[in-house]
Length: 627
Image (tube, rainbow, N blue to C red):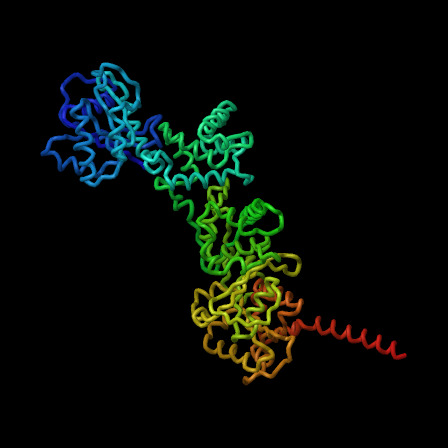
């Protein structure tokens, strides 16, 4: 906030103009002052909260000036309500506070008892007397109270500091005076701060973590005596929450409640703002959603820094060291966030990635899942990096965890595509084995039960390319949305490779691919691999004008790869898909002067050779036995 606008209100003769004059002149003015002073603007000075400019507006309580009063009240950020005797004090509750509500303003009110020099007993600054407590309890808008004397220049600077602080560090969002408790939104925000500062996730802020927290928020070290006093303050209200182990979450909340009750709520705001909270206790939009543009034909990926963060996060929350995150560990990990990303829920996480035998996501699956999320919706990754506490010395903040790949404009241009995450649409007739292919990609056991795919289904895993380089491959089965997706050019632009699949044991299966390519001629502009699934079953002739081998040969494409989800060698198909996505020109029709690659007609060759070898061994044993 650049400017704090203070509207000074109160009955006639309470000393409103004298307070303003005493502030500006730094001395009490004995000469007659005009009834309403002109607007005063004060530049930021040392000690001004958040370095704001302050505008002070004097007003009149006369009835014929009410229109001007209403206008100024609605423009203000804070109201300084002044009284000076019993009559004007009674009018605070009987007229002024109800009047503010009638006007419709909802801003903090600082209550000022002026002319304290006329009181028989002196009081010090910010002491709330018995007369102020009832009215504060009745009207929650009253932020603070103070006694002043314009004549003695007593608490004049302080009263305007309270007005500034009521705007820059409001108590209302943090603390409920009637309930004597922190408000739920404040509790939630402080719990997240505690969670992020508890680096070892043991449920305590140990002394080292407290010192780090102190330096982050206040940029000055905490003395041993200060730390001891903090723990003693907490122990008075929660004896078990502060010990040699550190301060637990309850103790952290108690400490902040003490700050609020002692009028030190600016301390809470310093903490919350350091962790990017707004005055409404939501995280700043610029923090959650920083500017990050992905040009057309480019993609977003995690940078090495981003991968390192997610690896460390996984290892930190895998408390039982079983190599997987169980439900309670996942819940603890996502504690400072709104929960698992909605897109993960839509993709049936964690079944869309690699899990261990107990069904818990592994580190390999965890990194694959974030690789897919970053590829498909980088803004979600940036948002969760912010929630999860990613920090970088780079000015870009969370964007340091991501990188943008080089644009790939001409897919059929020879050479390697400079990216490490690829998306492949798995297309084919119903029942051709696409779901089993995705399950095999995630190392799931083969199931004979057929479940038709309705909604699009994805599977993401890492693939080791020839030469040892690793990439991430996203396989997506389109389900009943296949036609809608294939006619959507934006969806096709996001796809790196098509995998045409058919059931080699079903005579009508390949015809679906032929019809699909006729219906959507734009598919010709994408690299593609043809795959004959269920090669473990008897091969049958396809009911179409050309057999698959003849069809691909006419296109100058490599012949279909024959594989089965029941074979261990199916992993070679995934390597081939990844290699084709990495070098897309190899998955386009060959030029007339370029020989067609016929080296990979059957991935099943290894399996056939193995069967033949076993047969020969058995035959030799039988002959030996007969001899």
